[in-house]
Amino acid sequence: MASLLPLTSEEGLQAYLTAQKIDYISTTLLIGGITNFVYRVTFPSNKTKIYKHAAPYSHSNTDLALDPKRMDFEARSLELLSPLLSKNLPEVNVHTVKLYSYRKPENLICMEDGGERNLKSAYPDPDLDITAIGTELGQWIAGLHLCSKKVSLSPSNPQDLEANNFFAVNICQYSYYNLPHALSQFGHDPKFGDFINMEFGSMLSSENECICHGDFWPGNILVKQKDGDVETQDLTVVDWEMVRRGNSATDTGQFAAESFLLDRFCGGRGLLPAFLNAYAEARMKATSSGSERITREWMKRMVIHWGVHIAFWPTRVEWTDQNGTQDLVDIGVSVMKAAAEEDWERLGTSPVFAGVDNVWETLWMQI
Image 1 (cartoon, one colour):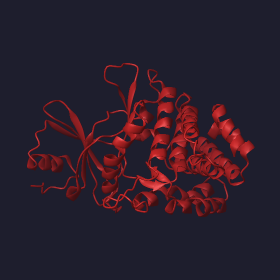
Image 2 (image 1 turned 45 degrees about the vertical axis):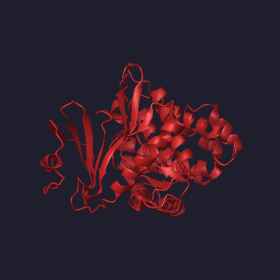
Image 3 (image 1 turned 180 degrees about the vertical axis):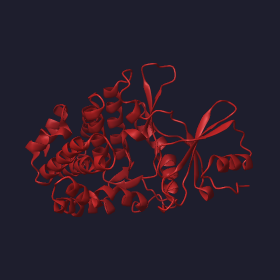
Image 4 (image 1 turned 135 degrees about the vertical axis):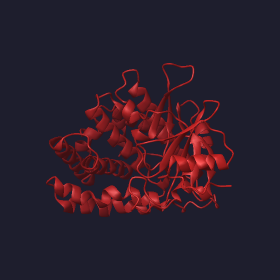
């Protein structure tokens, strides 16, 4: 018997657990999310699990309607990808969050608790080897892209590669749609933003290379000390509701952009070059057939996505003061223009590739 109370409060979740005859000690509503209602539940064994509920509206704005079917895609991706990635990347200390159960009628996922710290907040910790973490994440996301080209998101037809999470596609287009306004706010021609949206943002609705996490950034990487190993961190990739079939360049560009911001404002610990170098190396190792090669168009797509992120999101999410935000918008516009013009020499010395090693120099020669 399901709870009659909505799962948008601790009382509602407690009533649900009681109705399901699930014995627990405590529930805690976790802060920080803007779309879903997420809880940590402690059980008599002292083990904790995470419960995540999708309402038909945003947690942070009840007037904003959201399709709760996004939970279907998150649950399916966790069910499919965890064993696939474990098989293909057995040595990497990165894994998808483990799915314990999915109650579709309640839009409720129960999953592994990956810990209380995410990589964005943990970045300044001097005990963390940020270079090693960036390397493992670069290897892992490249592995996801390479092994999921024939993985369907359809819950009923595993051969259907056209099925997609269009809620996620629309959310990904948000920064492109709103780029012209952000540029005009900081003294740049909004028509250039329109051009970027029409030429590149429009691609998001039809790109279909592989499975993309869809919101791959340090805030969705949980960091926890690995059991029995004080020097190694267990990295759990969470928040898969934006999973979609798309272009691998967008996952890569988003994480690289957020890594640039962390390096710039939180200690310069080299997350960006470590991530990009590892990603490139993993892709180059998979080019024996030629089908996985990083191409000119892929490079342009990744850099454009990086530039859109840097030019737009710091105008919405505070990283620095007004002058510092102006610098970021200027950097984003400069990078996008260089990419649109295919000025590879200029891009090679841009902030996107600051500190990268000769792996990328090899790629410049190839393109």
